[in-house]
Amino acid sequence: MDFSQLQQQAKQEAQDITDTKSREEYRLKYLGKKGIVAEIFASLSSAALHEKAAIGKAANDLRTLVNHLIEEKSKKTASTSIKPEQVDISLPGTSSVLGHQHILTQTIDEIVSVFEKLGFVTVETPEIETEFHNFTGLNIPLDHPSRDSFDTFYLDQQDRSAQGRRLLLRSHTSPGQVRIMKEHKPPLAVIVPGRVYRPDAVDASHSFMFHQLEGFLVDEKVKFSDLKGLLTEFCRRFFGKDVKMRFRPHFFPFTEPSAEVDISAGTLGLARKKWLEILGCGMIHPNVFKAVSYPSGKYTGFAFGMGIERMAMLKHGIKDIRLFYENDVRFLKQF
Image 1 (cartoon, rainbow, N blue to C red):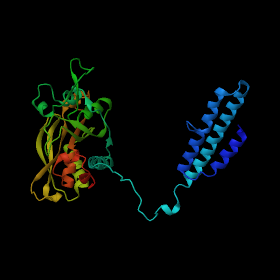
Image 2: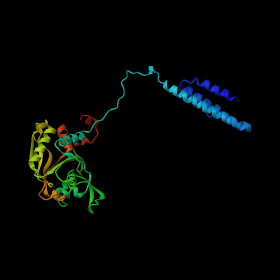
Image 3: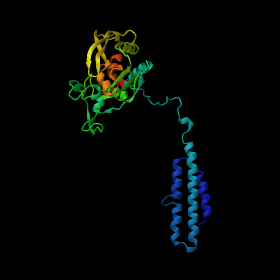
Image 4: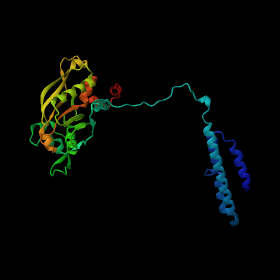
């Protein structure tokens, strides 16, 4: 068998490869199970002993040559497989739909921006809390009746700092107040945004998971008038300068005196002519200062807390809290 002639034949036939079909036919002719290279290896069984090495080497050389020729042709046919006239460049392109921040994230960022411009710093605190930070340190002892409204989901894991007590998912962002005051001394002006959890039945105005923002300021000679001035300025920046507000007495175990802040529905463009609650606030209770080991009577401070979903619902006229979590693009793309 003239192996040099076979190589020349392989080179000449490779010139006729113009597409995928002809390339595959060429490969099968030489490298297929019944191809020329397979026949050469099959002939080794009947060849003389002194010829086997030369025949095997020639078969391997031919296989290497054919693979090289196929690879070269593959590159050329791939670059010419799509002819310019087959592409209609006037057709519109296919673009990916870009997302954007969720309306709740937008609301958090907007509120945080207002308070940071007023001199507050933002701190994130854990969602898994101890009973001390979530209740006791905030003047809510085990037998306090208000504890029922702040109760939450408990974990099986034990709190190492208090034997026999379990960890829990925080029911408000106020535990951040205790954590930060334990680690830092006044003056302090801090906001703590984040998720909170309560075993509430889900309806148009309640969810077992929602978002809050806690804020507090501690220093010497802080007065309730400072709190009122701060929240008035915040509401004007968030809802508009024409917003009407009122402070009315309320009860919170961790502040004394305490108040709730309402805004007039009419100033939000709502048809209802009544007051709408937006947040709770008050002067930090002396027992909270005692829990964080602040000197008695040296410092005063105020705290406030608001629900992010409620602020977004009031500002944008959203009537159902469940819309925030249903992932309906028709709703989300409006904001």
